Length: 269
Length: 53
Image (cartoon, rainbow over the protein chains, first blue to last red):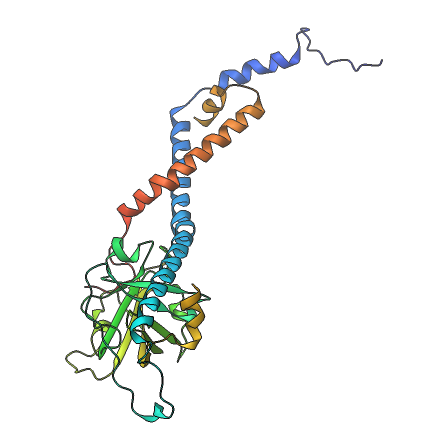
């Protein structure tokens, strides 16, 4: 009675081997079964790809774009220290004089960096290099840019419209938070000459074909520009591309040295 | 298909599980490193984020 009696089949054979045989007969590869499993696999691969594109790859690109912007910012800061330092000492009491027009740089070649953009509203430490053209592969999807300058629009600080574009979702999520801008939010553009400060003014939600937001006077054809504007365009709503959102800002000031709000960002990386 | 694959694998269950995990990791690595970037370059629309006619 110490060991339990093993259950036996009526014919006396051991049950384990008896059960194996009929199950093994069912194990064959059917065409429908393979086809079904391939479909499931394909579905999983598509989901994996989308997850990779929207989160994984985007997070990696965001980090790379930010550190590339830091490097570029420090390089321009070092260069301008040599050339600007003597001229920029502010004279006490001179602030009442109307500000001289800001310097406007010459256009740069395709895919060349022309500025570094800082927008505190987009998140802590947000910065991106702006490169010439809005080409997808060489600028918008690039690991060391992310923001592109529309080639036929003006340069930073110029009278007219300095228009830039970026993805809202994917490839570094550069302009994901454009719609969170609030009236008066600062948009800083650093070039090799110095720092341009723009104040955010308003949004327009437009069709993807609405190129008139890029005009020197946005959405007004044949008007002569008197203001210095900045325009940010990206997809709207986030994760979709049916519309575009355009964010307009007005030039506020130019300074050869970093404005205090982003001084740590510029020098500290 | 996957059931047949499982039966082809040698060794006891624990060894098969390890082999499957290694295979899955290798496939994921290949996807992320080569396949997904390539697919990405093929399917990207040329006007995302920008306004254009």
